[in-house]
Image 1 (tube, one colour):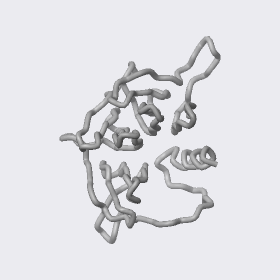
Image 2 (cartoon, rainbow, N blue to C red):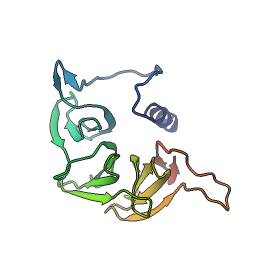
Image 3 (cartoon, rainbow, N blue to C red):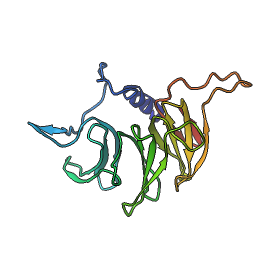
Image 4 (cartoon, one colour):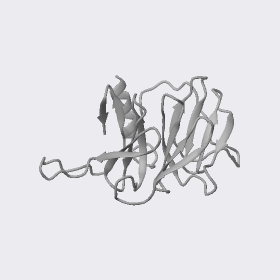
Length: 195
């Protein structure tokens, strides 16, 4: 059931286009990004529940990370370092509370420590440790993260400090694997990575 639910979520978020299919679920709450002409956030792309009942919400359209309480009240906004987040997209949390945020427009990751400090990781490119169109992120139990790269058609793995470890998904000529076409989701479960 966990994998089916995650697969349904990934199917629904493959692009930024509006959803056309109706899904079977029970709506517990709905938080609007606007009230009249006032906009609170635009184009949410990721949501991460917090232990206190609140949540972290990535607002791709307004370039920010929001911390909200369980009623949808915005408690805090983070817009990144001096240059700000560039089209943030995915979100993952490590066991120690460190959060990784993918920046699709900035071709990088932001590592946000529990104290709020931000470290930028990667940069546009095709080489090891470089990113091109990072989107979805998953964390494993060891404190590593996996990020899908739409532009490089691969998944890159980084350690808890943001150091590049390796990437996979490229075409492997000797194995017959054609490579990823456009990876749009990643999940780690029981030491296996699903893309």
